[in-house]
Image 1 (cartoon, rainbow, N blue to C red):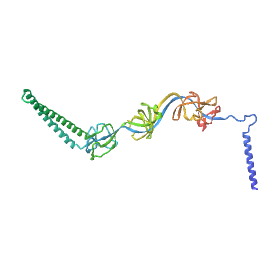
Image 2 (cartoon, rainbow, N blue to C red; image 1 turned 120 degrees about the horizontal axis):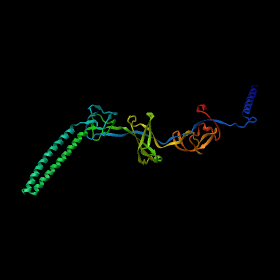
Image 3 (spheres, one colour; image 1 turned 45 degrees about the vertical axis):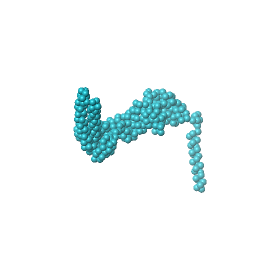
Image 4 (tube, helix red, strand yellow; image 1 turned 135 degrees about the vertical axis):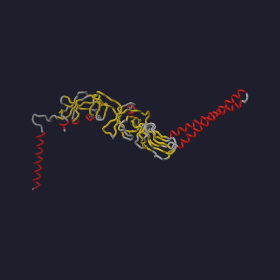
Length: 378
């Protein structure tokens, strides 16, 4: 009995549902079979604007100049302190700002002072020898003119004077070398910059050519980025560049292409581009990751539309929808420069036309539309 009642219940339910669909969707007398569908859309007026053609690259920020300050003489580091013009000194450590010619370190002078004294004494001795040789040569030449001595004696006196002059020249050269060694035992910064590395501590022995500190010029930084071969013809020196770094997400730095390498890397088939920019605020640090946008072209007073409203393009041509007399009209367009979420329309649209920017995915050519605000659609 229960089974019978259940069957009757479901038959009644199905009958009610069928009747509902029948009366709701079957055409009534005097009416069209299908009512015209009206699609709500959001519309914007086509306007002229500016757009840029860009190439996106990545690179690492580097100091424009890094110098390893090395020792030109050997010895013990007596002092590793930067000395100012007023005589004040501060320990040389990473991060210290220095200027060109500022004293950074001193190597024990004792050996070089002794070498200088020996060279000075040698010069004085050679000067005395030369003076004696010149006097003797003058006397011999006078005797030769009077016929008192032979030509061989004259030649001997001239040669002795020449040798004394050569010895003096050699002594002066040794004196100059001793002066250079003494001067080079005081290490100075070759550029204005910041100490980025210290390779040795005070009191240690240093060998000829050994690194002491590294100094980097941070007033200007550079980025070296690789450009794909297909973009090579579009990159040129002086091209404007926009740069972003993670440390300053809301800030954009402007620069220019400083140089373009004349040859491609044979392994990666990319072209090296160097970008330089001022760093007066010292915000950019070597090692920072940089996102680089090369601006290869700029167009003004052209039709620019949102990229996501342009449909098609894979099989058929690109197209958009415009509103004419309350209906959507499919309009085929030609796309030019693409910049992020925007693109240039080179043909098919005119400034002032009403362009569908929301709801276009539900449209067909000639379909009636209702223009609403995006808030109304939601």
